[in-house]
Image (cartoon, rainbow over all chains, first blue to last red; front, side):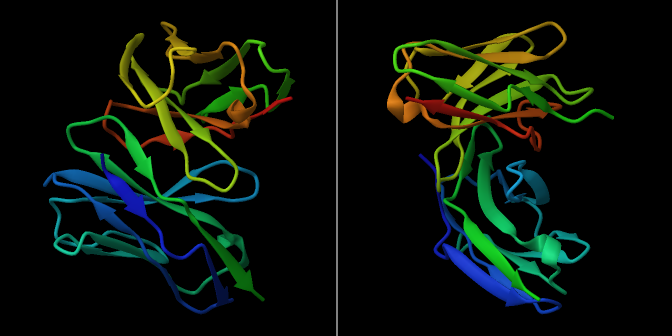
Length: 114
Length: 112
């Protein structure tokens, strides 16, 4: 089974600064999708960004970007110009291109310091 | 466009009881997945429904069952509740079985 590992249970960043959240995964497949989801205290999981494994270009969504290293099986999330509203639990997730199940990491709790 | 909604928001049951959780998928979505999220953990896949049929199941016992209706809304039923079933139950919908999933706010279940 695929596994997703987030080795940073907690991170903090100063408002307006940049922070990088780490994620590694284990798979024997070549085609898959990777995601970052944000879960604020309100509990609702919000899709932040998605990366297709066959794409070499790293995905970006406004202040959010990823560093996808397929050979290293690494998928980190960079948040630029951090805002107070970015404070949340962030989950990295994997989905096989041939399967329907998401595999989530254990999450990284991000605190933004004013 | 209406997002994913779930009901109820909170629920308290006693061990051995049965519970039904409900989910309305986002407009235009035909696939619904259910997840269990224990405190401090990431969501764990329970099962997925596509066009009213179960389309994959995680490592959960048969007392976890579900339904999907013609309007693509869905129910999660849990029989013979155990204390360890206390968790946040998340529903997610998508436009295809392997698309990005959009989550509802969840139902917090407490089993006493």
